[in-house]
Image 1 (cartoon, rainbow, N blue to C red):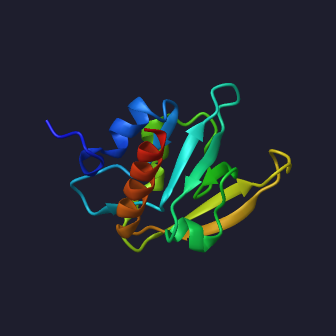
Image 2 (image 1 turned 135 degrees about the vertical axis):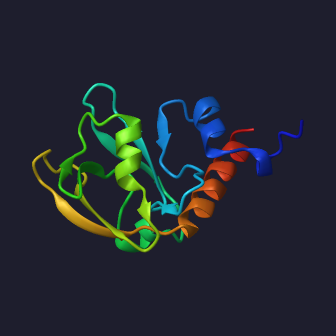
Image 3 (image 1 turned 45 degrees about the vertical axis):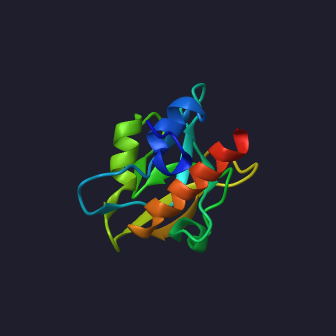
Length: 139
């Protein structure tokens, strides 16, 4: 089998290299689209932290930043959502929008800034490229 970077999926990278990172941009057979970010679940607090934002993604152009804590997704509390539920709320029809309530920096857990992000099927390739680059850099 050829295990070069072009054959590495985000699920493989998350299992091998990014242990506790939940890649939200998963290959799906539907028309669902994501926002171009990777989130990490903090096991102690149950909070989701933005681990990475893909360059050129709609998450980046909307102002989502690494280190942001996701408080709500379209008004639903993100704390203690399992990976499946979190991913289902992030993903949606291409061109639809997601409202994220985020805490930035040293802001308290109650403080929230709203970020409106468009879902785009183009984000999938951007996240995959970002994961491949991280995987290759680790080799």
